[in-house]
Length: 315
Image 1: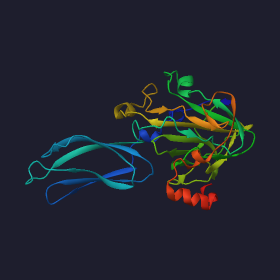
Image 2: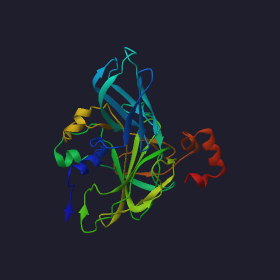
Image 3: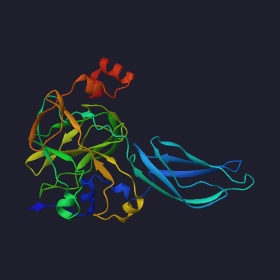
Image 4: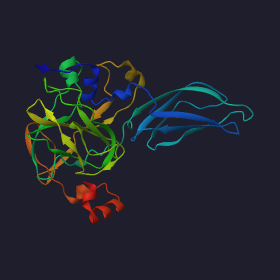
């Protein structure tokens, strides 16, 4: 039996929208502290790694000129802003609404960055350009910037990182349902990595409890990520893509409609193969390659020194 997508979450996964965008919880907490000079310090704590765009919408404000505030935060904690009184003899009274979303809106993406294909160096792979299931199964408007890939393998191979970054999401809870043949399912284990320029790489298709990296870990090109899971009881499949957060409209996000504007934009990255940067084409074959320039491009001095002393520490 062919089992297609069921439920809205499946579409979100394929469209690269995280369900966390719609459900505010306690990932970020905001606190305020009144000072003796009648000013107020507003600070935050963040429970998950990665960049978050935070917006405070002030619904009321007296004795202060502060407007709505927005900032991208990366650290686990820190100060957001200081409210200063107009009249330093009286307190500031205020209320606000907290909104936040994972990512850095419209970051300065390095469009010329050269990525490493996510398999072991020397492997030959065939790349498939995937379709957007939001368009295919929900009759929604086509995403003009959609760009995602898949690779099928005959065995449970290890997947490797395409670029240096920080692991911001690890999902390793699903077992393969061997009773159905899927065209796609949302119940696939995955890893999301944030890069220095604000882009995100998603790797989807890991076997449960076979992911090697941890939340918050810094990884490097050709770091081992995990082992592929069986797909359709015949082969092993990896889905991967690279995207970034576009301008954020929290009202649109709250509507949760299929036809609302996607909050992410995919990029068409260069990959290194045949000793040069190339764009991936559908049903085309590529050799996984890497050179020192690509490997060390985002290493700092300490990391480069450590790598040359013991490269195995970076696998």
